Image (spheres, rainbow over the protein chains, first blue to last red):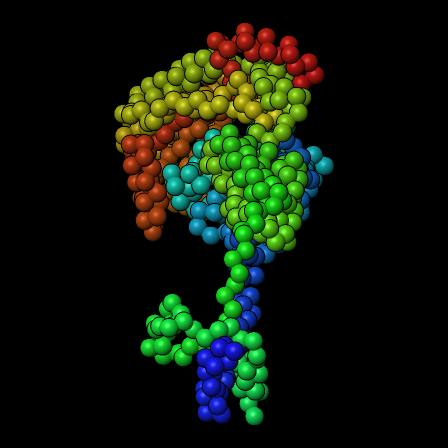
Length: 263
Length: 366
């Protein structure tokens, strides 16, 4: 056969060189596979972390949006449930999860729980983030005061109004700035006006609470035409007016947000 | 012996190996000969040229579904349908697309198209496009949600939740509040000018803030804040401050308001002393930076404030800084007396007929 005559003679010396080369190639391939495998194993935690990071970020938008839209349609339980989704791995803007939960609870009249959440949010908030938190926290405490007053516990009501006033008064001056307004969860309302209104209202409530508790109010002009019973009724109505003003805000404030959108 | 070498010998000595390379070697062999790595001794059979098989239907279905779904998502994003994007329908469709893509990836002839579909799906899915849409909604503040017809109806309620609309109609209108506040300011200015020689400057502009109805919408009522009046002279003497407030009290009573009361004086204020100190610079009216007196004309909505700012009691410069900031915003004097009226939930006479007509659509609402 011509084929056999042309085949190179691979004697003992000639055979070792291809063997070595083949072995080297196989070793090289095996090494490459090994490197690839270890690179894959080594980067697996990083890959998983990246996936988790992206997943967390994207889920924040979803949960926050759901929390707001549920709140807007008065589904406060749904809003709270969505806001609790933000609580898992709460690494980014951590104040928003308790802020949204507290706002939803406040709207659902679970006031002590709402206050606890908003106080937690206040601890976690930094810079202008505190503005919206303080507004909602003051409203919730004010509402607790209204509830105490409705139960006939004037002393507790006065104390709670005082606490709400403290929360409002301690709001940083920066919360009256244009920059704070731009970050508000309630862009259709002026944050500075809201703070001023809350402060005025709480002062009046404290004053009226004080007068209500006085056995004999000081004489008023035209008292003959306006008997003291009317005055007391007036005071009561004024207090209720404050509640209505607060309701107006609570009813539309997405919490958010906001001030704060989950925002 | 090295097992690699042993294995290499076995494969290199196999009988029936392909023919030796042609003269001059295989194409590209010379390039490798001079390189650092020797050419492999193992003869490699050239792969037979198989006809390329077209992708199967599953691959095409996956790719088409991924692209179509991405287009639907982007269209919904442009339309501002964040709620739709996060809705159960979109989530279900997304799962179907993902299932199709995974199925294509497990199919040898659909793998390439499945991989392309996977890339499309990773880039455009409910989470990524939903996130973009949520950001867009957040920026616009347009959270509509999926309100029921009943909620939408309530949203347009012209009054304010918890307020008897008949009370709104029977109390002072916006125009009446405005007229009364102007008359009140004029009389106070006249009296104080006569008695103390003060001169006056207007502060700020009148402001009308729409009031929400408590059902998620705007009412037809507004909060009125008058333009204020301020003395151009400071008032720093304690007795003078008392005299000024006494004169103002006489005037407000003549106008049918209650007696003034002081928020800043611990003797009569309902605010505790610590808070008074925080708000007014001290709990002693003699050393306070601010005096704040208040009254109203209940059951009508007018609320009257008389404030005296006194820089002479500013001990640390903080109050001056605050007043200067306020001065920069409104141009008002740094110190002296200021008068302002606020009235919440007032209805303009021009809107009265429309208000009454709309109320007919809301029996039982208050």
